Length: 200
Image (cartoon, rainbow, N blue to C red):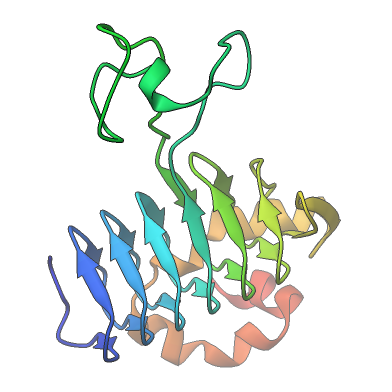
C-alpha cells in the first residue's frame, strides 16, 4: 500500500493493495482493496470498494459499495459455483473443469464525480468524468460524461451542461493541473462559462 503523507485515514479503515494519489480522505470503517484513488478524492464512512480505479477530485459518499463477481443467469441450469467452478471456492465442487468465469472487470470512476450515499456499483461499470450518481442508486451501466443519474437501476435524468460545454470541459482536463494553477485561478471555478473563456 502506498500512502501519501498528505492523506487522512480515519480509524477502522482498511486499505490493501491500493495506491493513494495524495490529499485523499478515507472515512471510518471504509475498505479499499486493490484500488487506485486519484489526487484529492475522498471516500466517506462505511464504504467498501474493490477493484476500482477512481479519478481525481471525486467525492464518494457513505456506504457506497462495488459489487464484484457474477453468476451465470443464462443457459446453465444451476447458478451455484459448485456446478460451474472446478475450484472449491465454497468448500466443494461437482465439476472437474470450470465452465464459467465469475470474475468482474475493474470498475472505473472518473474525475470530478459525485456519488451519493448508499450507492451500489456493479463490477466493470465505467462512471464517466463529471457524473453524478444519486443516493441509493444501483449503477448497472456506464454513464455519460457530466450526466446526472439516479434510480434502481440508475438511469440518466439530465446533463449538467450542454454538449458543447461538456466537450470543452473534457478537453480542459482541469483536474490534471497542479495545485498552484488551481489556487491562482480558483475564482474561475464558480462559473463554467467564465472558466472556459478565461481558464487557459
